[in-house]
Length: 356
Ligand SMILES: Nc1ncnc2c1ncn2[C@@H]1O[C@H](COP(=O)(O)OP(=O)(O)O)[C@@H](O)[C@H]1O
Ligand SMILES: N[C@@H](CCOP(=O)(O)O)C(=O)O
Image 1 (tube, helix red, strand yellow):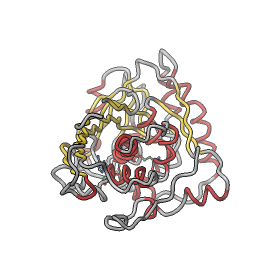
Image 2: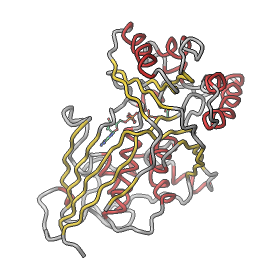
Image 3: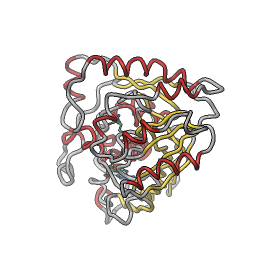
């Protein structure tokens, strides 16, 4: 066995929902979280907690939002969860994880989903847990990120529909245990012999949809964060039946509409409408309703459809042309609310890749 082992893990960001597909649809996009990992097996003792040194560059580096404590950092705490479910208490001595993160945090581009997916792969690689398939890793992800759309896209790549299998009552109880029992707070798990609950088998599933090659994703990223948990708290517990039917009608169209080449702008525009989450999130994202309602393929050549990306505040506009003009128009609405933005043109991406 090589004494110094190195590998990289590359996980895409994602845009979830794409309008009506709340907690179902995900699209992996071409901006990647990368982990550069070195395991120095010549060392027998480490000065770092849990044998792991973390360094970080990119988003979250200067703000301190990405913790360098292996039990607090989302990526390494997820890796520890996988390791501890397999009776390995810590990282191999001595592990260095360098995080390169271009994905803006708390903006609706799946930064936490990417961190969770990269984390399960990190646990698998560090623990030499070769028997863990992608589908089993998906189970681990769903014990942490409890909606499957972002993690499904980040893990498998492309344009995916995700769904949960009906579980036995015992397995439902195991899946829904509090997150604090899956990822204990720092110090809660160190050397206590605590063995976290392993996920039930076969929780999450996915299906890949086709994506027309002409369609590109314009992401308009406002300079403020909306924590996904907060954006879920503003949603109602119950919905009027006409609103549910409205979304069901559109979700039946969406995967077909986005797979057809050449794309039909009117069909896509219609298929990207939503009444289950966007109207409620308007309270957290000034300008959202105006952006979604004021732009159509007729008024904006090249535009196919526009929606909130994930829980926001990023706006996703799908288009075939005139990308800069469309981005400028959306940024203009945010500017009217005193909000600065950045924008990026992205394309569908493959799922997580490990390179050794
Ligand atoms: N690369 C990363 N490393 C560690 N933690 C991360 C990373 N990316 C995201 N996170 C955690 O996830 C949080 C953002 O999650 P969330 O509110 O779900 O927003 P998003 O829409 O970006 O997924 C961050 O504040 C941070 O705690
Ligand atoms: N379906 C979820 C997706 C959250 O995505 P994120 O990128 O904002 O984490 C939701 O809409 O809450």
